Image (cartoon, rainbow, N blue to C red; front, top):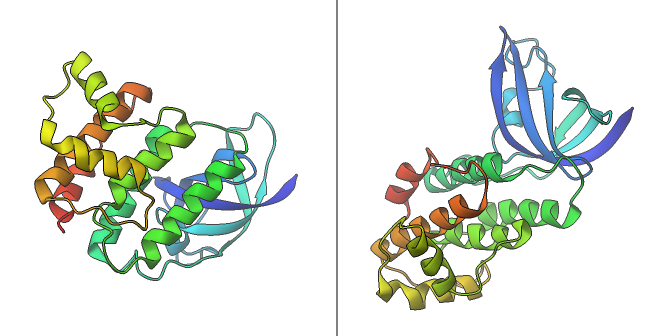
Length: 229
């Protein structure tokens, strides 16, 4: 059957000569995988720009319960990102978020509040003109609330990473870390570059403890170099 839904592109892989397989987080069906035949050919109906990570889409999809890879009937961009694709730092953050989504999103069912949070977070990143260097950390902390393991304070994170001997933390980071936990996106928390890199590492280690097979993220090494304020 055909259904309408909004979707957030997570990533895609090439398939055969001209096709792609796309992973999309949908409003109606949660995490889904679709095949688009001929997407990489000059005659393809849908252009590859529609399948870049974090693209926000309006979709008409074929869906059946228990299906593995399904098909797209109609696809269009519903909220075009005007800065993320052209801003070097924001593009790096978008790749990081895409990798986090790929590791942490597992539900194949509707979760409208989570979908709306992710959707609005992407729009916020696109529209923000300054002070978005802390956004990856604040996003991870907010996302953890929807995943069910958000820390209430920095000490909670420090205690867990210390228990598993993952990292020696810097006690002087605690106050700034607490501020980030308490603050919404729009509230800027001043950090040194060193604090920002260390706190990002603490939060990623916290995710590794709570998300199965989260592991290392390839995008982090580049992100660390870009997040300067």
